[in-house]
Image (cartoon, rainbow, N blue to C red; front, side, top):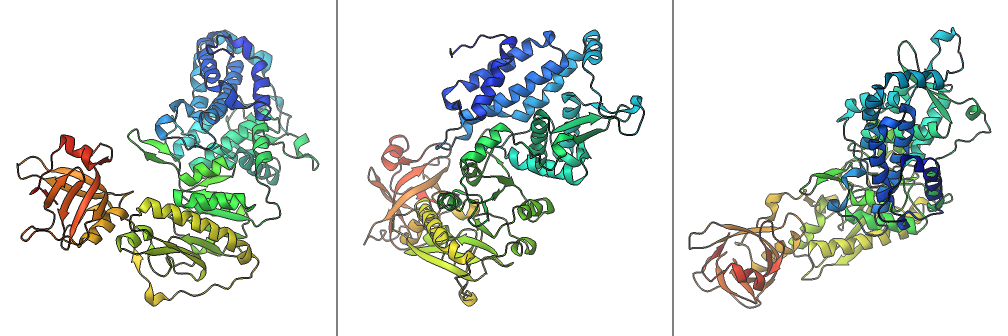
Length: 583
C-alpha cells in the first residue's frame, strides 16, 4: 500500500470487511499494514462524504471506523517495549469516535425527504408479542443505542470523552456475561439492565462494545418501543437453542487462541499495580499458571499532559492477553462479583495498594497470598525497600504470607533473603526483589495449593511498620552521619528524591537540588568549626559536604526541570565553592 492513501468511500464496501476479517483471524499482521493511515483516512472520508450517505450507511461506516481504530491502537503499541504516554495518539479514544456518530446523525437528519424514504424502505419490525401491529417495537438504530449509552455515561462521569485502556478490552469476557444475563432472564432485558447494571465505568464501556459485537453477529436484536421509546435487548430465537453456542467476536477468538492454556492448572486471581509486581505476573504465565483474572487500579493521570496512564500490571496483562478488572474499590460489590465469577483457587497480590476485606479473603479455598518486599515481621507497610536501604541494611528479602485482615500480619508461607550492595539504589534493590519474589512464588505456589506447606506465625513482638513515602520524606538531614545521609540518597533515588537546597553566601536565590549519587569519604572529618551542610570543597570529582560525622561527596545531582548530571557538568554553569551551604 502506498503511503498516501487516496480512496473513495465506495472502496470500503467489502475490501474493508475482508481486511478486518483477515486481521482478526491473524492471517495478516497489523504491524505490517499502515493501519493508522487507513483509519485516519477512512474517518476523514466519512466526514467529507456524509452528505452522500443515508443515516444507516453512515452508522455502518462509523462502526467499521471504530474497528479500524481498535486495530490502529494495537498497531501503535509495540509488543515488547512499553509505550511512553507522550507517544500515545489522542485519537485512540475509540468510544469518543463512536459517540461522534451523533454528529453524523444530526447532520443527516436535515435531509428530511431522504430520511422518510429510508424509513419506508428499511423499517424492520420485531415479531409481535401479544399486541396489535401499531404497538410493536421497531428495530433500534445505532443512534438510539448511542443516545441511551450517553445517558448511562453521564451517571458515571463525563460523556463526551471516554478513554480506552491501553490494553485490549476483554470483549470476550463481557460477551459471555451479557449473553448469560439475557438467557437467565428469559431472553430479553432492558438496555439499562444489560449494559448499565453496574456503576463501574469500565464495565459500562466494555459491556456496550460487547453488545455491539453481539448485534453484529446477529445473536441479539435491539428494539425500541414506538410509544415509550424504551430500548430492549432480545436474544435471537436460534441463539436460544441449547445446542447453539455464543459465537465470540473474531478478534477475541484470535486472542483466546494465543492465550496460555491453563485448563489443568490452578485458578489464580492476581492483584497488583507497580513494576515490582510485573515479574511475578509474567513468571506465573510463563510457568503455565496464567491468572484467570488480573485486578489492578484504574488508569491515572500522569505526566505534564495529564493523560491517563495504565498501571504497569495492566500493561503487562494486556501483553499476555489476560482479562483485566480495573477497580478503585476491590471490596465493592461489583468487584467482588467479578472476582467471585472467576472462581479462584487462590488470590495472589503484589504491591496492590488496596486492603482486602473479609469477603475476598474468605473467597478462595487456598486463601490470599501476598508477595511482600521484606523479611517479615520487619518493615510491614508501604515502603519496605526504601526503609531497608535508608537504615543501612546489608540484606533484605521477600516474604510470601497468607493474608488476614491486619496489615502484613498473616502467617509466613515462604521467604528468601536478598543482599543489598553499598551502592545499590531503590531501583536496583526493587528490581532484584521483584525477580526473587517471582521465583519464590512460582516455586512455592503449587506446593501451597496442594496442601503440602504449613504457614508459620510471625513473631509479632518484633514487628516494625513503615508508612507510604511522602514528598517531605525526601528532605536530606545533614545533621546525620555521612553514611546515613548516603543511605538516604540511595533510598530516595526513585521517588520522592533526596532533596536539598544550595544556599550561596553571595545572596543569590536558593536553588533546589535532588541528589542522585553520593559516597562517604573514608577517614575524613570536616574541618573544625565547619557546621553540617557546609561545602568543604568542590571540583570535578564531586562536591564534598560536611555531615554530623564525616564528609559526603556528592557525585550526581539534578536541578528542577532538568536531567540528572554529573558534578563536572553542573559546575560548568553553576560554580559551587567552599563555604556554600546545603540545607
